[in-house]
Structure formats: C-alpha cells, structure tokens
Length: 385
Image (spheres, rainbow, N blue to C red):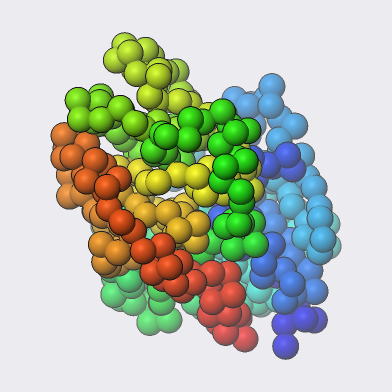
C-alpha cells in the first residue's frame, strides 16, 4: 500500500504560492496523487541566474505548503552558456544537500522532464535507495533533439530510471531502446475544476458578450514561435470577408503580449480580437462553456491539458497536426486538424465551416472521459504499486 509511503517530486516548473494557470499540469498531478501517499515533497531547481533576473518578483520563489504537500524552490549556481553542460550536476548537488540538511526522506522520486529534473531524480535513486519514475513531458522537437544529440547523459537518465513515462505513443519505441520499462500515459484534466454546468446566459452578461456573437477561444502562452497567434489573427482578418458574427478571445500572458497587441492594432481588429488577462482554471472553464470553437494552430506542442479540458466542456477543436495530436483527435466528431500552421487562409475557411457544423456534444463529452483524473491517476498508481 502507498498510504505509509512518501513521494518526492522534482520538476523543472511548478506554480508559485499565488499561482496563475502556468505549469499547472504537474501541480494538478501532485494534488491528485498526494491522496495516496503519507506526504509529498516537491522541489523545483531554480538557477541563481533565473533568480537574479526575476529578483523584483522573487516572492514567487517562496516555499509554501498545503494539505500534505510541501513545495520548495531550490536555488543552485548556474550561468547559461558557461555552465549549461553542468546544469544537471549543479542542481543535483544542491538538491541532495538540501534533502540531507532538512532531513527529508522518501520512498519514490518522480521527475518531470528529462533535464535537469530527470537527471536529478536518477542520481537521487541510487543515493537514497529508492524507486524512480520519470515523465518525459518535452514537446517532440525538444525530445528528438535530446534523443539525437549524442549526449549520453539523456539516455543514461532514461536507462537508469525504473519506469519512463512518455505523454505520447509515437516516442515509446525510441525510449524502449533505452529502457524496456517505457510506456505512454497521456496527460489529463481535472474534471472537478472544469464545471460544465454554468449558466451561459449569465456568463455572457457578466463578460458583456453580445448573445448573437459566435465565440472563438484561444488559451495559450504568448510564445509566438510555438503558439502561432499571428497567423491565427491573420485568419480572423480573412474570416471578416465572409462573416462578422464572431469574437476571438485570447487568454493567458507571456513576453510576446506586446507583439500581439501591436499586430492587432496594425490590422485594426480590436473589435473582433480581444486579449483577456490571465485566468485561473475555474475562470477558463467559464470561457470554454460559452465558446463555440477552440483554436490552437500551434507550430509545436507538448501534450497540452487544454485539449482535454475543452472536450470536457463539450467544446470542439481546430488544431494543427503537430506530432502527437493525431493520436488524440482521431475523428472529426471531436475537431479538425490542419496540416500547415502557416496556412491562415485554410484556417479561416475551416473556422467558417466548423462554426456551421451541428456538433454532437455528447460524443465529445463521452470521449473526454478517457482522459479524466480518475482514469489517468488510476493507471499511474499501478506503476507506483
């Protein structure tokens, strides 16, 4: 049984104590799996370089605890380019010393991402004589770069873990060459947060949205080179040549926000493209309930939880065919995949077409249940056992 066991989680990223919806996929996993353990300790390696850059916002690196979970942001000495090859070793030494100093003991170490967290977990496995699991969350470009880099430390990390979890099927055969105990477990969504029973009329009144408008929604960090918001906005300009009964809302925040704002101004689309400040998950659920289509024409993806969250809210999807997504969107009953993220003309045509489609929302909802916490955590729990 796991109830008398202690879990250590090492993750490249984790929300701060006053968290907004950034890096929440590891937090949500931690929240759910914690109920099966006596206690959970989460450690996030933070380079001193990152800490200095964000010194004005250093409060976000404050340790905190809740329920049976303790979260620590552990600083280590690291300067990009100069010490990049040693980031794993430096973060490992810092975390090892921290664990010893604080007297933290554990039975399992579960690392999220290969470098540096996976490396740290692999080293701690032998130091503390525990079992180790690594979840390889990297998007496929990142993963293939690691796999084909010729740098042995990545493969050694996978090889020396007890179980390697990949968030898509296509890469499992590659990982099995390093570790036969490699498997696929897709990402998940928290159905308790994403309520489907909101009063849509009431929400539209609160958000001041005209009832006759079709709502297009994009929830993504503003990393243009990944999320492709510029071509999405171009498609909106083309869509205006066909219809004007819609609004596109962009939710989330990142360093590219000003670029997107300036582009909207230059294209004179403020009446049709709205930027919404970052929202917590329960607020995003409201937006998903009132939306007609979810749009994410990404260049590259990890396994974004937002896909499953949209399905749970009966919301169909238009996405680009990036690496693993075709494993999930297997029927046009759930959404549509574009082959070329640059083709904003086709995206515009597709949006118009699918706004007119009579979607069977019960089919979408039934499919979404395959990716609930109950299913995914149940699968993961078997590997712990």
